[in-house]
Image (cartoon, rainbow, N blue to C red; front, side, top):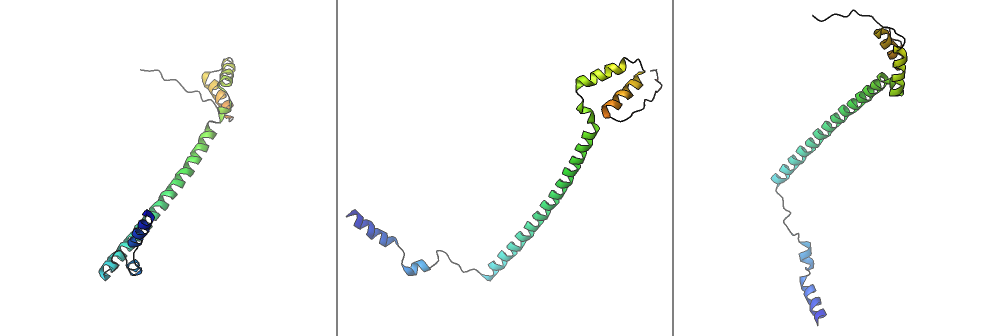
Length: 131
């Protein structure tokens, strides 16, 4: 009996063919409303284009900064090329140079030359005594 009642109630809830063809809401739109919507669409398209241009500009700036960072990083690596020597090695080299009893400026020039693998000339400067 329950099954029969369910079948009857389900048939009563189904819309007729004519009801199914009718939209649930009115689709009549005034010409004015269409023009407003088209204007909004144009405005949104302009905004999208503006944002795309902004993103493109930001990406170009980011690429330029990344390139500059890579270049700076390479320059720093080149400048600190002596890092292939350990601290112990640098201390040992410095001790050997200092034992030679040369002036400090010459010792420093020799140490820098060894660490950076490029010749550095010592320039003896006159020490100015404080007043």
